[in-house]
Image (cartoon, rainbow, N blue to C red):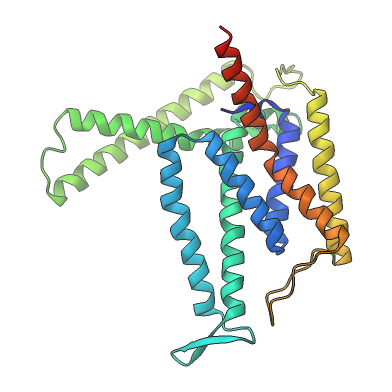
Length: 293
């Protein structure tokens, strides 16, 4: 399901940029938890079961690692829990590790969703006129990683079918890995040359070329863009006024609960859940349509 990806690329780019920046630079735990929950739900809606299990196996150890590492290296805070090698492990450092882990996992998940939604053609649509060369490089780089992984599987399977991994020794595995690596390098170079020749034959980079795009700006794009702009403005103003300020050092502060801060929490939580709500709505409509056939 990628119903959220049907929005205009400009709207999508500003949305992801806003959510990622707010969750990365504002330390308020309510905002970071909201961003993480929205990212988890949206990533689960975009992924298959096998990929979800892989994400769980990656992000849970990462969360624990960041949580535990911070109090071991940072000894700031006024509430020592215990001493390790003469250094105090403080409660504030532990809380900061938890908050940092939530922010890191949330940002990484949102970036993963961004990579799935913002395809190469959308990147060209956004930056093709203003930064044509950079947009081509970015789109090629975004396409290279999944293409490289697919080709790697094909070459590895072909090598196994030829019996090159028959031995279980380490030397045989290293030789097989080197063969796969050499094949991938040759394949990538050949593909890049073919792409460059094709682009040159089609007149890429020449002045006066017209551009065609299937993307249009619809009213729903305007609603999402307006909501994003309002949230960013509300968050910036609230942060400037100190309405959502939260500190871990030297002592953990209380979560702000003023009317303005509560309004920011509700607005940001709603914005973080918009992609998941769009995917769920599309799934329900699809199942209902199928049931009527």
